[in-house]
Amino acid sequence: MSDLSKITTRAWLVVALLWPVACLNYLDRLMITTMRDSIKAEIAMTDAQFGLLTSVFLWVYALLSPSAGYLADRFSRGKVIVGSLFVWSAVTWLTAHAQDFNQLLLARALMGVSEACYIPAALALITDYHRGPSRSLATGLHMSGLYAGAALGGLGGVLAEHFRWQSAFNLFGIIGIVYSVVLILTLKEAPVAAVEARPAGGKPEEKPSLSAALGYLFRQPSFWALVSYFGLLSIANWAIYGWLPTYMGQQFKLGQGAAGMSATAYIQAASLAGVLIGGVWADRWCRGNLRARVFVPAIGFCAAAPALYLSASTSALAVAVAGLLVFGLARGFGDANNMPVLCQIAPARYRATGYGVMNLVACVLGGAMTYVAGALKDANVGLEKVFQCCAGGLVLAVLALLLVKPRKELENA
Image 1 (tube, one colour):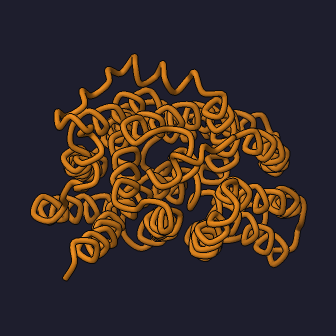
Image 2: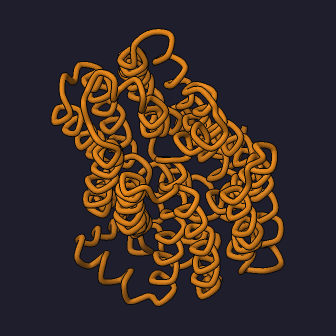
């Protein structure tokens, strides 16, 4: 077997190994939103406080993301991933043992610490292995793990109805600890990363400091545009993640389990199709048009904006689901191409840091929106108004994305 074949096989193996980690990450993020009634029955809190459980996770996750991304650029991406999974698993298990709101809030904050390290490191490792022709598809396949986790998050409501809300956190915490041992034995750094870091003279290139990495990124106008797009998109994503189960239950008179599944399964299924279609489409189109990785998600969100508005404006469940399917498809187009677009404007040594900055902005805005939506609900403002505003935000996100100018020399780097 040739060296190229070995690298290609290993490259797809890395995607397969990281897929379950992505699944576990998002399962825990969204599982709690489908257990609202069960959790509030045992732990007293307002709707604003319930929204704060997601918000505090996002804010901690956001604040640590640039530094966590830098750790992956500066040291070993694989070790950062394994460490993140192990801490995630321990905190997930501890969440089941929270006795009051403050303990539950602390557990969600600690979850933000663990998860901040994962996505930047994982996507950077995947793009180290996948260069050019397979980059969007590989990224998209990994992101499909997030959708699977989000869809399985709907099971939280089902388990909470039939058992106790703590049972799911106990189960998945143990699963995560076992899988972290699997990764210790199998996950390897990309050989191409080591080759890239060694210039013609043979001496390894010194890794940049965090300030140097941030300085480089923020001198790029395209990075500002990409961060703006990602932040606007996150406002809609996290409003939907945090409050769609509640909206579906109240608007369409669904039980906690049915509302949780309706709010997660349809979007995630469409997103899975979206990453496959959007990944293959962008990889092929990019052979003739460097801006294809920008255009594919832009096209998707142009369709998603009116679809999301329609979903929030109808009393017909079938119409609402149809709109959510379009939104999910577009989100898949975006997730398959967000990191590949970053790869077109930043060299490999800055990519995990760059994605960490994107997460910082996106999660601060998303966390704020999740809390504000809960506060508005306490003030008797309908959630449909929140989702309608989010639809308008998608239009602004597209405009920001179109300002990104890819650099040809980085496409295959």
